Length: 298
Image (cartoon, rainbow, N blue to C red; front, side):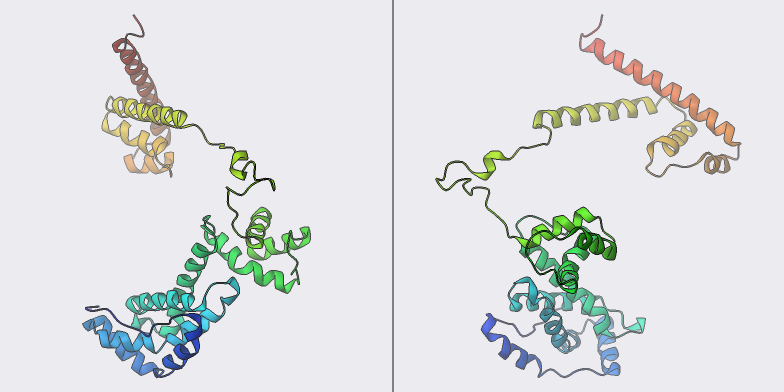
């Protein structure tokens, strides 16, 4: 788009009624009008076409925002995020796919709102995987269906049913329910009424120390350098077979390589075994040489 497309803005919550009245002024588009405007935008980067496409769907954004009111966030902010998602949808919409813009746009609108909710709900990052997001946005609904309105832990049978329904581990259900049942707490909150001691005083860092992490990183770099140096002692075919069989995440089979080199699988196995022996000897020699250079051996 050559210039920004402006849409009506929504201010504080008490201006919601006026905003909803304002967006009703924009007419809905027929299928033919929508197709024509979408092609104008795609072929000519027509900002006026983009404006009409976006504004005709602002009521859709507001409707979807209403469904997320239960998360305690201002509706005007949800609508603003949804409008951004709507703009992204219009920008990426392909009019030749044969479906209406609203069908495509609602996924972008919901995604924008859900990302905002996840980032606003807690200072601690949550809902980082698709399964966790699905759990976050469906747990409240499923608890309502089970009439599990009480605060606190779910019953084991409720946890099991929710986990089965959403296809997630039971522990994830328990953890997410605990997160949704209480807000963030400060690590500086006192342990006792007299104010002595804070929660953070009892936290234990179970990760490796910085010294250990640095030592492991240096050791890994050293091994990579040794391997790279030793690989140069192999001929091109040996290097390729070792790489395909030992150094790739998705390794090739003996059958794959036998077809590639037009030899038997046993021949590939023999080349691989011989190359591994050469690598081990080369790496052992390199280690010995470094130790001599460092004065660690005579």
